[in-house]
Image 1 (cartoon, rainbow, N blue to C red):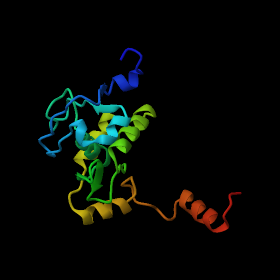
Image 2 (spheres, rainbow, N blue to C red):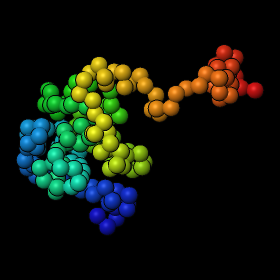
Image 3 (cartoon, rainbow, N blue to C red):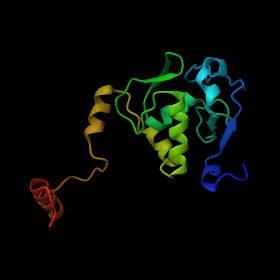
Image 4 (tube, helix red, strand yellow):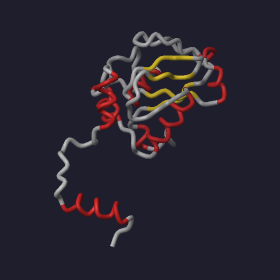
Length: 166
């Protein structure tokens, strides 16, 4: 991995041959052997190493389902072979297949939008109740109250009515 950018090396990414057998993760009971994911034959298999996260069986490899839970903060399960189904409607990212997980993981790491700290926070803040999750989606990302009399909000309201800025 000497030619791998430092930002990716710092997240400890490694590539695993798609023929390599990977044991099931005990937390999600997913059998991650390649023969269960025929589409993976077309893509490089990417595993993320997060040894500081205790729920992974082996610090030398990470379960894709656990990665998906980390990224989108939702409960996931395997459905119809290689598709991921989400119980919650709230999350940071939405992945619907293993390929999407791999592709988006690469994209977000490369663009610097995904860091270990944010992934850990998204896991810790995951809500188990669907109602609470829906309410969380409607809330603003910041906890500061919105002041309707502030200059910024007055201008924003004015521009939204006129449709243009002066």
